[in-house]
Length: 200
Length: 221
Image (cartoon, rainbow over all chains, first blue to last red; front, top):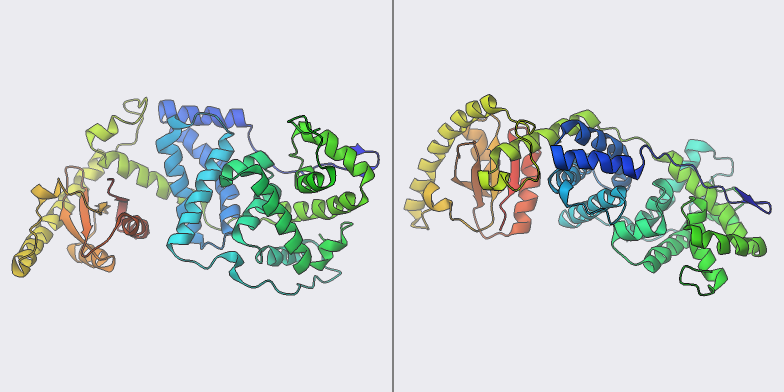
């Protein structure tokens, strides 16, 4: 979409099933205890959650454990889902809280506990994978809450309302975390401040 | 105008909404006024130009997870089967709209497992009783363990698990058997010293990682 020459087209993000289709899978799990429906829903969310949790500095085995704990809840509490939010918000919210508890329980070092360096010099000619590695480096400098807000917005493509529901915080808190994340990234990745697509 | 009908403090609020313009998830009621602001605000346009490639990079660079999804699901399903088989009848009734014959049952496997773990349990029970007699502590048996309300873990071991393995495994987590096996092969383990429910959650999570443990869940209050 273009508005008077301004490109406001969204970044395309894959959406495998509609919320209604996912709810139908959940209904089959709740009402008929169907393993096939459960397996399908698990497959839809596995990579999605693994990507998100992997960026919370969790070990691979912990990521798998959190995903399975999440889907344990989905299996046992499927009938309790009231539909007040999107199913994805419910599932990702469970995973986020489980991951946070795991990190706290294991006393892992929070991602953002390191001092933010002066900057990370992105080579001007960096492209594609190399660019994304520099971005990852920048993201690692963000406090966990800010990073998760940004990951939920950009990696998983959630709306402000959905992120607030997942993180269990007010809308303004989401906006504030995103604002601070953007500002920090500009400090550590100066190319971002230059804008005009120079960043990626 | 915002959903509440008020005129927004345009620049600051539009600036905060730019990530959702970049990812296409801005609410319809916000889209109009934010886009109108973008027409006249070079600073916001510049920021949007920076955010869109960032969103693109983050979306595209999320590498697939290396662990096998199939293996992970198999592990989860085994855990579900074990839990549902180990579930007392009154708990099983709590599962809503459960259809008979649809839920996983592997009766033969569990009978075999129960025979093995029962033998292990009897031996350990004897050892535990002797130890408790020696130190004159509280004597816990299968009978009074049923009324145990402290922190603990319910466990089902793989059929080929030996007594030595069970002893070593529990010792590593500072646990000891206080009951079992039940008719579905379920043991109950309690902490050797002072502990709490959080520690049992961690212990159960760690025990589930062991190949000899088919099921491990902290006791519910």
